[in-house]
Length: 110
Length: 112
Image (cartoon, rainbow over all chains, first blue to last red; front, side, top):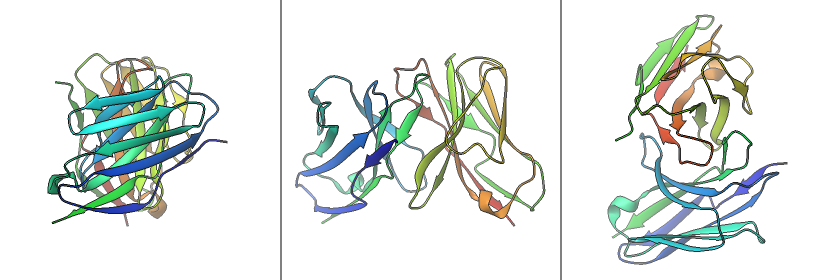
């Protein structure tokens, strides 16, 4: 079966670092995406990993281990505007359809 | 910038009505997708299309149909709306199967 797990909620303090984990079991794998979704808005693309290792993009980094079926999103120097849901999604279909986790709601507190 | 637009942000319909949700993208993307998003369930794929007049069922196609007569437009149809179809509906598109998906703003549908 297809399964993607990530924590439901996390809380962190402004200025801190937070790591959001994602584990997956899918029949296929063509890459892993992270999306950010603010309340009432559409998801927006953050990062894409297809090879093992760390991808860094400003305050955000994403890591992938294909052998472990594991990824994480690292957010540094947290800001209040980072309060949002973070969605992990695996490209596991032959036609590029994504399988989404249920999302992690991150609350950043002063 | 890629732009994906949806015909309505908010929609209220009655049980049994036929409902059309329209999605248009302006970047000549091959793939288009329809999702619904519900609290605690995340994003679930209803249907997707990788070419004009082509469609594939996603994880929850029951009660829905789709139409893709032109490359830029992908329509979701609820033949006879039911209260359990009250949800946020999100359309997305991507250039090809390996690219990120760009999402529209969503349509919050309420079926009374």
